[in-house]
Length: 249
Image 1: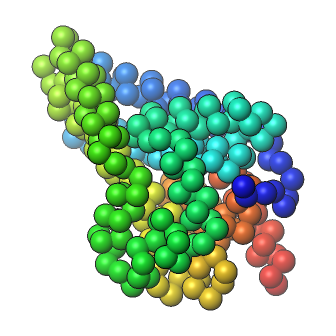
Image 2: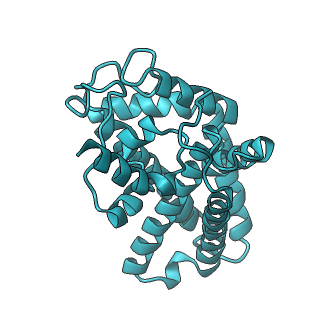
């Protein structure tokens, strides 16, 4: 269990973000499937896909904070239930397996004991991405995803001739892009060769302004800060980064 060194976060803020991300994800999906891609211009479809990708990533970030117990630190059972739900909605991911893998990552980052690590820091990003996906998305999860997408498409096909295409555009594609987003900003760039390999976390932070860090991956790019202060929820990482930068001066 990773313990806190800076006191518990404000639980109400984390819960507010979790509810907001979840509702935005659900309402955007229902709205887009109801409208259908035929009634949307190409630029609108692109914006919708990117927006859905960010919200999809947000679901994983909610589950990620729950893995660290920082979503609702004063209510651990509810914390775990919300985390379980977030990971299930994200990609039918199993809570216990994901939490165990992630804590192993924090205990030995950038080593052969790290399930997120390729084994070679200079490995090609595509090979590393494959290794990353195999560690989290097994055949069982793929089966459940296909069943879920098919059920949604069949239901929507009752009123929409483009239901299957819409599910691919607004469900499948955002999940794929989200997995790339999480891998790129949360694993590969912070832990690749030459990225902070001299520190115990084998991690570095990406030099981004706060607004870009949020859009890129909910501040997951402030990765050294996350490893140094794993008890901090994602929305407090910018403030933690400012404090740590000030302390190092």
